[in-house]
Image 1 (cartoon, rainbow, N blue to C red):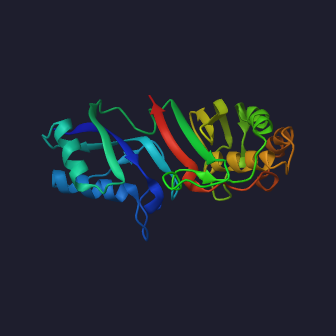
Image 2: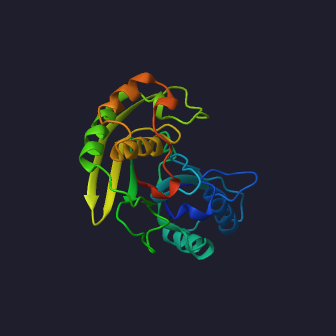
Length: 245
């Protein structure tokens, strides 16, 4: 009898071309599916709560799969972690109802973008943050970030090749704070457009560099024009923290 399991996957995305399977590049999905297929001795598809871009990380990406294997969750976790590379870890395996869907059942996602804002880089954090040695106007960035809260048409912050049917999304929480030389940007909502968080950050950094005033973010949002916003921040600072169901 088939059973459905939830995987909670942690990965450092530097070496991969994102979560989703690619024809000509290595993805996290490919490695997890290969490992599962080997363990269960059956071709196994793994479906996640969403996709992350090349170079983006995850502390807890949920994904589900179906199997007839009689292995217990703890056995599956141990076997997967023994086969996966050091930068991909299965934090949890648990049985879920057959009606569960990692993507469709998701209620809220939390993303965090980390900027290292000091005059020297970090050897330990260079793959997990965007290093900006120039002084940024934190107060202005914080004021600008508040314009992004709520329900809006986020066309100005979506990638040109985003294939989402609607650009309207609701950001339930948008917050910027300082922590030991880092600027931490957190955004929480049910769904996100392609490159949306990175485009938020690129625009806020323009505010921090005083290239645009904080209040201009409201105008950018209302313009519904990607060309009106700032650049796309690099992927290494972005991490999917958690998905709630």
